[in-house]
View (cartoon, rainbow, N blue to C red):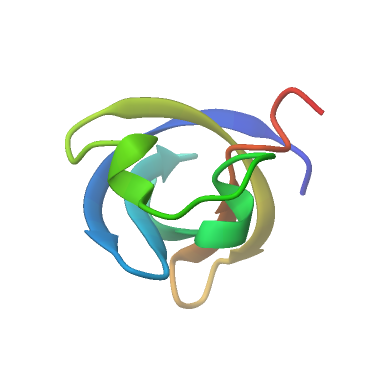
Length: 78
């Protein structure tokens, strides 16, 4: 999709961070996989993002049917 948007981090898991955002009037839930957090090695996601934080992400994939997305922080400035 290659669109940069602002999302709010809603939860953090060992494998990634979850975010919520609205796009074209519809609410989506997205996953920022640990490999998409930063260009450096990520041992603890909490070192990079916090629950409630607004971050800029690139939409990698969007599933309108499930209202889910795959997101990347590291590719925003790539």
